[in-house]
Amino acid sequence: MLMDISSEMIHALLPVYLVTVLGASMVTVGLIEGIAEATASITKIFSGALSDWLGKRKLLAVIGYGLAAFTKPVFPLAPSIGWLVAARFVDRVGKGIRGAPRDALVADLAPAQLRGASFGLRQSLDTVGAFLGPLLAICLMWLTASFHAVFWVAVIPAFLALTLLLFAVHEPMRQPGARDGKNPLSLAAIKRLGAAYWLVVLVGVVLTLARFSEAFLIFRAQDVGLSLTFVPVVLVLMNVAYGLSAFPAGVLFDRTNRKGLLAAGLVLLVAADLALALMPNLGGVALGVILWGLHMGFTQGLLATLVADTAPAALRGTAYGYFNLLTGVAMLVASVMAGALWDAYGPAATFLVGGAFAVLTLGVLVAMRGVTGRVAAD
Image: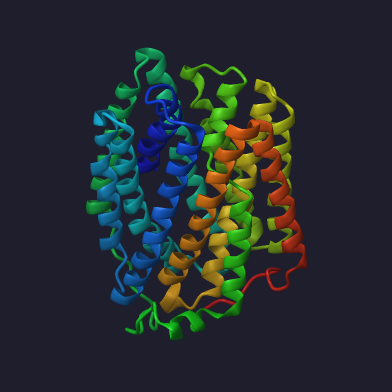
């Protein structure tokens, strides 16, 4: 939560700062956002595999959160786009290092029959920070009208997060068989992950192609007239919807048909894209942003749960690494495409094409077999 407060204080303003202060184009912003997320995803595969091989999770989490904390002061100090790209890159490396071990920790600790609720709760707690961060950014922008002041304040919760992890979080006992000492990146390990796991990865990749960076939600709000001071309210709305829906959706994951819930999440994404494309006013943008957040609540925790269900316990870190690598590449493609469409044809075209990809994803999901219910406990 603390690191999300820090990161979202910066990320809520960074796209606008890049365009209005440093003169970046929309394609540049899309490329930066895509590279940032792809970097995190590529790093996750190695950190996840290393956590499986070592049988340790906390050390990698500390390194990841530490990198994120120590890059935060670069944002207010950066004199050019190049410095911001470098800071964003290192920050996402930190996210990549901590992401897979953290998710593997949740999977290790959660009872198999409550994994959906556990990942839903984690998503909800994440989003508490994700909407408190933009709220603080709004207040500080209103008080100071200074990007740099907001960026400096964001340094504080980042180092609080690192301190909390260092002194209050302890490495859990690993279950018997949770570490086998084999190379988790070998071809044999890839085969051991199994067809059901790779089917989940395919669903995640296709879904990610339908959903680009949330930076474009901010641009859409600015495009219809929202002032710079209140631009971060976009992420507040999205994360409130995300946070309020993720835990109830996670509970449903454990009790009902998961394929149907994924389909419901895609329908929400289609509705969000249509509102953002066809209702060019603040009310339409607010509706689209709320629907976008609900879509996240219905899909992200479920996908994380399905990875835990389908991957062997000894390869969970590696499984999250592969999943995040491939969905991160898809996010890069989607974000660059969204920026190019925006520059060439305007915001409506960007969201309509996103909606078309979501419909395509829904068709792929309906045609698939195997993503329908719970997997047996370990």
